[in-house]
Image (cartoon, rainbow, N blue to C red; front, side, top):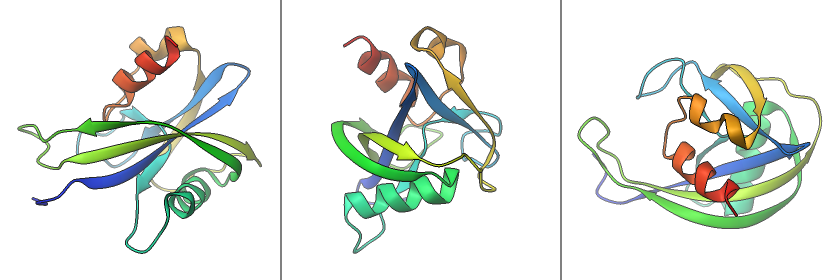
Length: 133
């Protein structure tokens, strides 16, 4: 168990008022759950570098611009003993989606569909609050 919070970038990509989510193939939570694209910030990388790298690795998309939205503490719980600090960004992008081995499929969902998906890593709670703005 880490004794410090782990910084993670989470990216909100929109297309026609729909949001991109990825279905996980491997997760500490359970296989088949969904999340926003993103990942850990590597030592020595800026948040921008982390966004660019993670977006390219997970979706093959290129970030054209990014804007910080807000953060979310995901505190340790019984079945997940890590403390993540999720840093959320809106991303403008180009390219065609090509998933890596971390995800089995992707979907563009409307804000109304968010409650119907098993979104992990605090993504569901954040998206529901974000979409109410």
